[in-house]
Length: 71
Length: 225
Length: 112
Image (tube, rainbow over all chains, first blue to last red; front, side):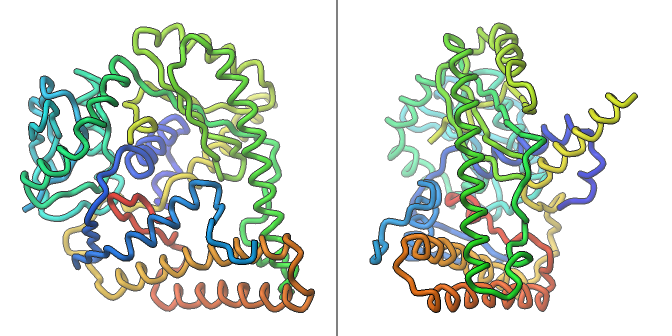
């Protein structure tokens, strides 16, 4: 955690938290080909996107994974 | 050189003198009656506090004119043609969203219980090298979180009921911090802002012992898809 | 006076919650701060962390479902415990100790 933030008054910290939460966790997304850039390397994962999207969707549904062979 | 995307507005609303990431000028790509707000960026943006604030500021600039559909940080397309293709595919959906969001703003309420005893953050501490104890600690932590969210949802529902008439839409999510119960997003007509905030103060005051962190008005981040 | 101290303590509590909420983001991205190896390590470790959390969740569900013997529960729990400890060691080796593993995947949002 950014040390500078521990000195912010609560109101400013709240505001900063909300801004960061909004832009990273909310808002519309354009699905499709995913260009992920990590450390300057452009990586395009299509198969990975399917996997990641499934996991993310499962997490949003309260972590109820559908493909449980032991249910 | 690609394009970083900020938000979508009706085509009649375009950016004027708006600066985006790294100070790059924001402009509109017009597609099917919509304006997609973009700026030139060499590569997909990497998350930073500064970048987050700059992205948010552009969406706020749009909000001064009209309620936009905010786009999540990190949306990047190679060129204008790609914007045309993607936006055309979403045009009907976004047009519908813009109509539904017109004249509204979002308010956030984070519900915390200062008295809540949270489970140990590091589950390994209680496990003492026992496999069963570790799994049971995981189960206990998950149960505690679910219980927190159930409690938070109940409070959120009570507050929503007390705000009836002011709230267009509500969204409730878990808040997985030490004292967090839930995060509630309310979509409110901007004209109702004063009445809403008074009603919200009264509604939250009814829950002694809980702490409410409220903020807004914001662009409708939680109601954009 | 006591009331003011109580309010200040409560504020600090809340501020601590806020700090938990937001990810550990750098203030800004330095143009020349690329470390390819650490960047890839972080991506790999984050993906492993996702799988680890999924596995833990599955293990808990199976234990609660009652279909596992005591011996199975113990072995499963120990394996997951060891996995978490091993990952912590690897994080330290790559200088990612204490850093919150998370990757911003643009359209996919944050992974964790």
